[in-house]
Structure formats: C-alpha cells, structure tokens
Length: 108
Image (cartoon, rainbow, N blue to C red; front, side):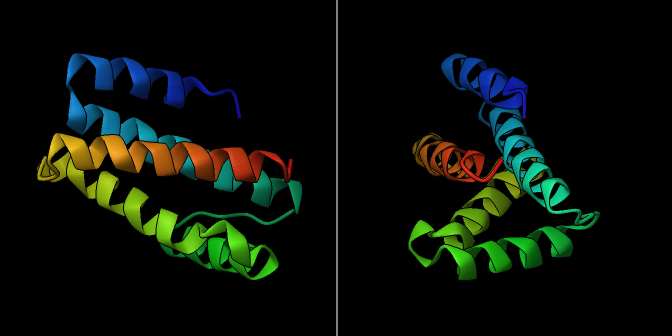
C-alpha cells in the first residue's frame, strides 16, 4: 500500500471536505485489506468478500477490533454518497481507519 489515499484524506479533512475525505478513508482501508489478501493469494472483488476476509483476520487477531473498524469504514463509504455524518464522527472514524491500516501493515 502506498498511502496515497490516507495522505489525500488528511488534506481533505483539513479543508473540511468530509464527504471526499470519507471516500479516501474507505479507499485506503479497502486497498489495505486487498493487499493483505493478495499476499495470501486471496482475490477480493465485492464488499462482502472484503467483510468475510476481515472476519477471517479478526479470528486470527481477536484483539485488533477489525470487524467494528470495518463497520465504521462502511459508514464513511456511505457518507461519501449521502454526506450525513457530522464532522466529529468523520474525524474519529478516521483515527480508527488509520489504526486498522497500521495493524494490517504488520501482515505484509
């Protein structure tokens, strides 16, 4: 993972563009999940496959809280389309997404 989406999300958050930041945060998380899956020769193509793979990772690392983090990222994904989350929610979800990505980077 090259971190492009995370960098973009920080800039968008700083500008107050919460809908676009939400999209980049979702993209960053999805990219990391797919990178870990690819390392294990697993191909992911749907939101469901991402969720199932995260469930697998959660079973391997039960203390990482991956499934709840994915739920917050899904809220961010919806926020891109609906722009319904208050800014403080987007900011706090961004912290969780960054932590999720840091944890998964250890698996690469």
